[in-house]
Image (cartoon, rainbow, N blue to C red; front, side):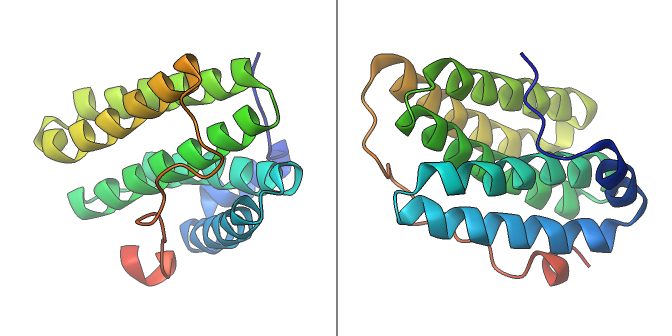
Length: 158
């Protein structure tokens, strides 16, 4: 199963306009994060799904190591929140799939950019931990997300 939250037209638009992508990511993440903390999984899911897809677009479009590191962090955090939202809706299979797809993407980033080993290994550790929690049913509704806030992604990259 391939989860899709962006339509083809929006995907093309965001791939061609990184500044717009950063704005859309921030809006999706902030909305999803808000609904996540309200335990409104049905509302959190589409916003976080959008954030995950846009973060992957940003990661693909980034040039500098600093940009790639931040984009990897955004992808990781939004994917974990999305997976936990799916899991809290009793969609464990989708939750595991999201984490596995993100693990694969971060591993590709590591292969393509070995100088980012420290950053990628940190993100992979968090992703494998989340996967373990989902698989073993050791998941609280909110998990440990005190450090998840992502502030002003537009100025963070540019």
